[in-house]
Length: 298
Ligand SMILES: Nc1ncnc2c1ncn2[C@@H]1O[C@H](COP(=O)(O)OP(=O)(O)O)[C@@H](O)[C@H]1O
Ligand SMILES: [Mg+2]
Image 1: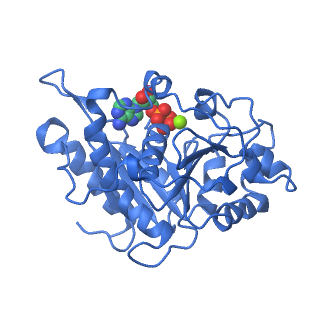
Image 2: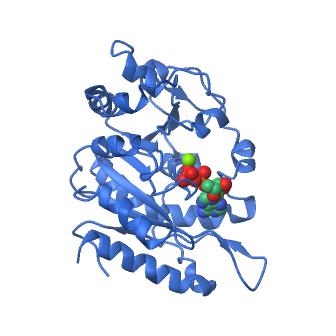
Image 3: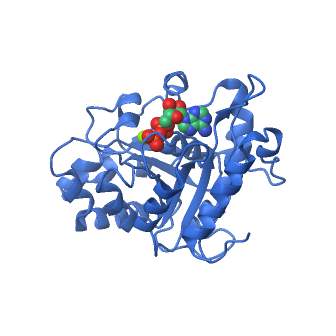
């Protein structure tokens, strides 16, 4: 069965289950990761921009963080999602995937939850004691994340690509969350697509991995079917997480999106099933993840 067929089957299953409220919530994982308090401090050598405070309230108001009553459930779900990604990224419990540290969060269309997933996955990963997370706003046309973090005017990804002599580390901002740092989208320009598909992007990707072997880079990206930048990013990313809004992504659209990624060696699927129950006010998140490579089961 091809990657696309497997993915569609998962989507169909999840859509069938859409009405079964209780059954959609994954059970808590038996293996819980290290809590915030044990996280290691970030390497000061690897992030030299001004320290920024990540305003959780601002992110929550923008819909990019769960409401407080939903946070615990989401935390449990992201634990499941992040584990295989981290394993492949840093070679925990197995070999390191080539460029596995570079994780692109993709989706077919806008509004499917890429930025939401990138932010919450980055926070979840940053709670691990042996990794440092760099969250990159690679949605250069709509840099929502950069704007919300107060980095809308700051130099970032595009500047590093435009000026090869610029040290990318000097553009990375540490945050008040010690193991999480941020690289903004940078100064916009008509050259964005060319820059992202250039050899400079390749060089930058290597540099980010070489400078810190414990670093995981989470790329928030533009939609696969609505921009050309995302295909360029997919070429450099070692792992791609495709976010599917299970209750609304049409299957033909998902198929088209997955076709643009066909042949990628490390594709994962996250079903982002935020929805309201038909029978109550209960608001919940349902996530499932499945490696869409050769090791897919079911
Ligand atoms: N799991 C989720 N739970 C609640 N709201 C979500 C979830 N995923 C996405 N959203 C909401 O959907 C909207 C679009 O999400 P966003 O991450 O900005 O999409 P994208 O980056 O793919 O365009 C946002 O308003 C966000 O709050
Ligand atoms: Mg977005």
